[in-house]
Length: 413
Image 1 (tube, rainbow, N blue to C red):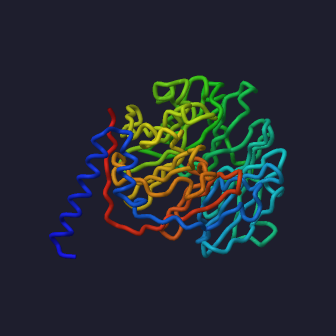
Image 2: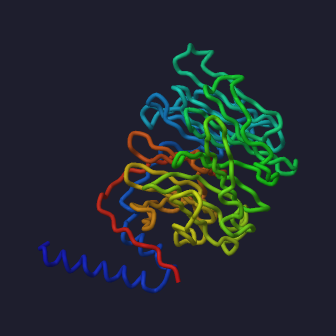
Image 3: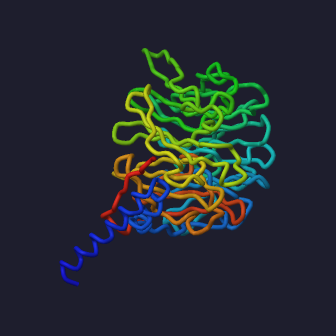
């Protein structure tokens, strides 16, 4: 094929895309799909079927520790379990159900992080105020003594998010909303037993704030994304004056919508800005018409927030932007979509977005990740754990096949 013909074909493709974009914002998804051909990514499964048992409905936490990829599950029948792989293909069970996660109390592995060369794992979601826990795993210790429970709380419903700031480990909690107690945050300088201090109580003076879904350090402060279905999403900012912590609300009204903006996803830092994904609609939309499409907001100073993406990245059935993750120069957004399956989008700048994966990774039952907890990178590839109550949770790995993308901006009417 000669160069002139190649140029003519390229011009024709650009013109075709321009037609789609010019019609209106609702055509942007199709234009991006045509331009990116799945964004130049393939998504082979690393594991499907809930590690061989469908009651492992969700791969809810992923974390790399000492060169191995660890995965935690949600299992309401027998309790969550922990698995790991060194190759990405062969998995071994590290913790069986019922050991650190019990079916009637804390059946979900909710978050993982690495702090001072140890892996930390949090549990919860028993359906009532039942024993949220934090566990420490030290691979250097002899087998049989590697797992230590470092904190529990019989009032809280679970520990949902870890954050590291000023050489301290923080963990946020979730509470049973009906109990009328707001959520809490704890801090430890070592992560060891008896070293934890409660630094936020009763929802930071908002008893309807029930879950800390993300904790991220940004510009010499620690930010917490908090769910509140009365006042709307809240974002708390913690600053230090010497050893004194001050927690203030920088967002307290669901970004202007207290009825739909009630449930935050993950937060991350990209190109000097802090980003957060949120839900836009009810927690359990019955039909696609109930969803208005999740949103992404960003800030450069923690005080003024602006929308970076709306309308579910062009698909209103993406009820929530569940996860945000940065890998190299690429910024990924992962959606929750209970109708056709979750989607993965990528951006070079936080403004222009490209679709990268078929809905649900070709299985509509893969509806969402869990916040940022089930998103990480392993061997320089993005790795995503999914919620799939029908077939069992799964793990997919993004493999880039094209390096030159066509990124198209979202257009709003």
